[in-house]
Length: 163
Image 1 (cartoon, helix red, strand yellow):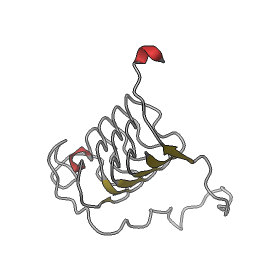
Image 2: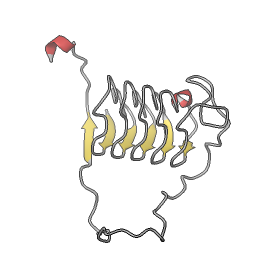
Image 3: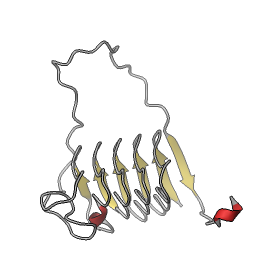
Image 4: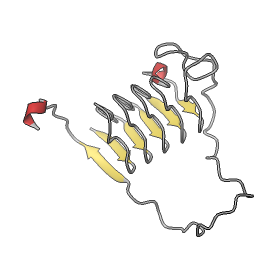
């Protein structure tokens, strides 16, 4: 059993994109996230993870991430945050970061951690420049829509022939 919240257009594409997500733990996924083969496979399994919007896109992008927060627009390439798997530390991936592999990133490779600092609180989400002019109406105070809270009580794997 687990406590899972999934936003709009998340966990919809890729083989096993969100399999085992939140199993025995707590997982919250924003909109347009967890796309790609095994992108969020076993995320928060026995742990607690919050993933922002437009994050964890790519094969194994956030696979097995166990504890922490991933900001908006982060971990968007194959294995970008894959080296952070099964950490017992609460990790924080800031907004718009860890979108490539490299020494100064979250991960150097799928298995080797990079030099980026992953501690501290998640910074506020970036906002549009106050100088930017749009014709959009001002935001309303309505709560977000399209989120579903799912309580998983059991999981049964089936052969694809049964589908």
